Amino acid sequence: MNQEQWNQVDDYFSATLAPSDPVLDAALADSHAAGLPAINVAPNQGKLLQLLARISGARRILEIGTLGGYSTIWLARALPPGGSIVTLELEPEHAKVAQANLQRAGFGDAVSVKEGNAVDTLKSLVADQVEPFDFVFIDADKQNNPHYLEWSLKLSRPGTVIVTDNVVRKGGVADLSNHDPDVEGVRSLFTMAAANPSLSSTAVQTVGTKGWDGFAITVVSG
Image (tube, rainbow, N blue to C red; front, side, top):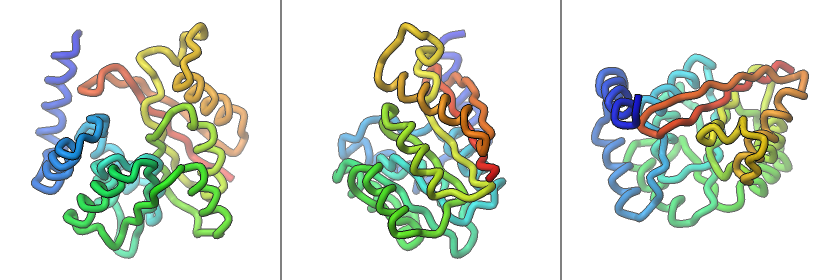
């Protein structure tokens, strides 16, 4: 198998089961025009996030890493009436693009884009004693993954689902001689999750338009 074949299969899945539409196309186009990196989730991955959020019955979603709001739109489409998303983005230009994309998608009122350092924002949410989140999607700088998990747990409840993206690092996660900060961040998250008796986790490798990667799923049990 090679990248071209992976792309073909992902394109087939997306076209058949997760077709794009003008709103999603515009979000990607505006992100590209603004010079944002093309690191958004693939369409079939966005649909997976939407389905996981729906399966979990999420009414309140926390997203760490907004980029241009493409994954945010997928998640917002899983919300029931009255549901909401808080999404965190470090870069002001990214947050600006995301806000416009979400407004056009009809989620301007349901989604709050909070600009700034995500760990600081998470600490503020904890200090404000906000209502716990039902679903968390972690997709930001990987070296801070353990901090994102630590603070996300303070904002969770029993039953909260936490999805962490990009955990394979092209196989680096299993290469103990690899000390790249992003790889170390993923390993630290796994170590924390495995050591916490209140968490149940697994991880899955994937291949596709995003190359060789994968994601982790954690459920908070209490």
